[in-house]
Length: 113
Length: 112
Image (cartoon, rainbow over all chains, first blue to last red; front, side, top):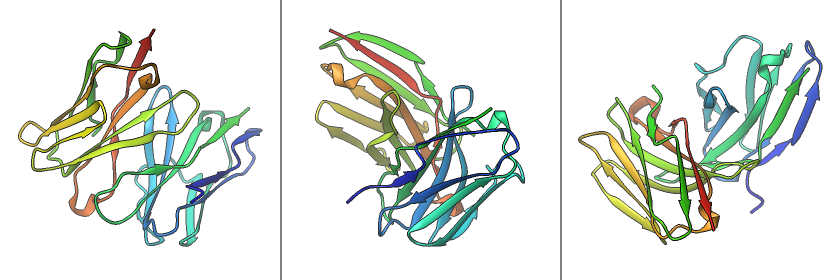
């Protein structure tokens, strides 16, 4: 089991550019979560899916952020246009049915200059 | 609403014990505990479900007081490998089943 796979690991982009973060969850994990981590705000939930359906996107900061999960093995988080305040580590995490914990991916460190 | 963790930071010598607390203003379905080392992803330690159970994991254990909506993580005979940031994550269940809200974290440093 390769775990939750995120790409890229690091992304440096200029303000105004489009950024796409990718996540491949663990097979069988019905829940997929996108979190953002910064020193100031900690771990913030952006959006989560259950069986590929978005359940709660109330944490998505602005319309510049969008997320999709076209199938059970792939999800994307897109920021367009990106701004310096979007700089953070973005984690994808998965969870199966039942009383289990989250499995986090290694994260994508995004820097917008 | 974010759960509140205390203390914010703890410094220990190897072999000493520590307790980290997590408090919520909402009725909880479960409490999770995670450890994150610098530059890495959070790693799941354990989950406690409502019902006031206590769990153990080697020298790390936790309790959940459902009436007070509080959980505590106990680290005994600490090792250097215990260093990191500890997060509690709370789940209220119902229509928010599966969704965790994380506390701000407690930084634990263990010195030789």
